[in-house]
Image 1 (cartoon, rainbow, N blue to C red):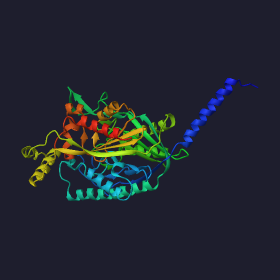
Image 2: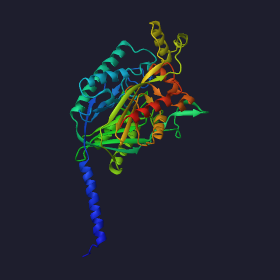
Image 3: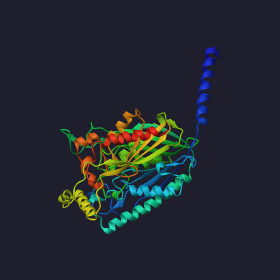
Length: 460
């Protein structure tokens, strides 16, 4: 029989004490009320899909259901926060504000505590955010379908929020981070200028995959919220069917890996990134599996950081100024064009003929959720390019900063200073799809970054 010496006994005693302290910390860690809910938002009858102007007819079939999902965090006394994900290309600000108004009148959720995001699938219904994308006015029937869909969506999401609030239960929230590599910069640059879309392997991209893992007291997974910065464009314009793209497939696969859990995807600053490879249905499965495999790996292998506070929040609309508002004469010169720019010119002339004005700025939504010192989550409106997340992480010296785009309003593309110099689709060519008169002013990136940092610093 081996006799333990004093040093061995002391070592064991110290180990037991350390383990006891560790177990005590886990056991005594405060739980946070979290509720989740899902509702099917697949169009009930064929209508126009958004994301590609090349589609000419209503959709042919439904290959995957679309979902709205909600995660409610915190107590009524604190004022609960809710994150909503919608399997849509986007939505206009009027939808978000109408929904926020109704949510605020039926619950304790204030506007600043309600974050509404879109997965930006290009295989979902037109929502009123991109009406100019077809280069013509929708017919009366097509427009009625959009209005009816959005009214029904508003009712469904209101019920969704009520359900998520009602099923809150004590939960542990853990933050961790993985990576995925299928996002690739899509801007082809020659001699410092944009020449078109393609594959730019050495272009800037964001491959981080931050993850919130929600468990019950016994460690069973209740929900997962993940972020990845990549367009929902694996499927393209000749795929005229309803589908959630890689985001919808990832959610399905993750929920199969974690039975009974709700998986939610928010999109980061990936407006200038496309999934690669793409344009074949098999690649949707490939990218969804890549996300799922990484989520499983991170949960099993990586050390998570406990999140022990419900978020404190702030929200504001911030003016972004256009570089140039065309004159009536300029609109007249473009009104005959048979494209989105011509349609925008005709719409603008109609506005001017009624005595209206074309605004010189746009009210841009910015929102921050601060989970104390443990995690900061930023919500930016529109299609935000990758430079923003890289710059914010650097200036805040926070590589774990979580930045969501496509939030609270589809807006338009939010280009960076680098892109202003290069020009191209995200800077100029897409603005008319979103009813915007021109690119934004060149100081836009500096102003947005400064305002986000100010909002972050004002929160505890």
